[in-house]
Image 1 (cartoon, rainbow, N blue to C red):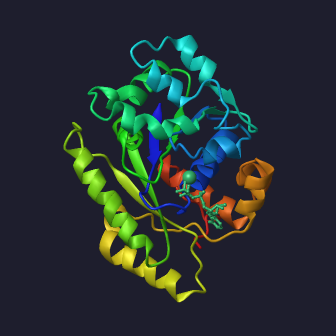
Image 2: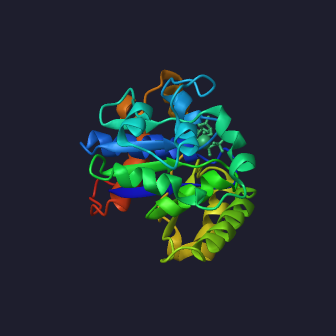
Image 3: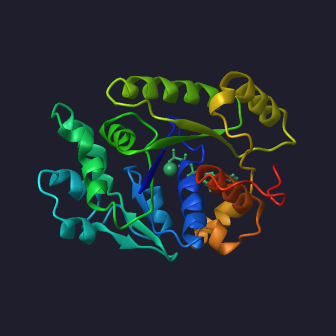
Length: 264
Ligand SMILES: Nc1ncnc2c1ncn2[C@@H]1O[C@H](COP(=O)(O)OP(=O)(O)OP(=O)(O)O)[C@@H](O)[C@H]1O
Ligand SMILES: [Mg+2]
């Protein structure tokens, strides 16, 4: 089982879109894929047409009963989605209260790691959608993953958010046995704008070693796909956005690039 966390402390940079689109490509290749919605806003949960305001079993329940998590409690939480091979552990709005409830209790940083341990023979890939703030949910995600993906919108303000995220990673690495590998993924790239090309150049200058050498382009079809509740690669595999996420999926799963893998 391979676990990726998708995080950035800046909001609206394409985290949830990255989770949905990468998962869709993995699932289309036949990989059983699990998604975790760790954001109390529940955008990922809503994407697949579940209601985070009104859900009986969710990641919130897993935190409440974290001492004893029999597999059947986890299976009650697990939802099938609109796409074959993609399963979801949904969010509940109540997760917003977890920081206040658990703040001082130790051992609450490994709830997700322990949950995934019980599912390790069931799923090949796990993608964790993180909230845009540091707290017990983000700490759990970073403790449980093998690699961190940081989507960064290609505009100037986004660079501050990236710095903040890398600072968090630095803090987290102190309590991990091995440093967490990470990859910066430029998103919503528009080559026609100066902000787009200049931000991409700045990323290349400052973060070359950890930067994906490609970018996810702006594509209005992402909004259409989210309205339909279907991942874009399943809805329109030939769209620019879908094809870019396919290249990212190949990079992450170490499939060699082919001549048809044209960069943006
Ligand atoms: N490459 C793209 N081109 C065009 N629109 C995009 C692209 N990626 C994401 N979007 C749109 O931008 C909005 C924000 O994206 P998304 O929800 O994925 O960001 P997020 O980082 O998860 O946000 P939050 O921090 O609020 O959870 C959504 O409406 C989404 O459809
Ligand atoms: Mg999101």
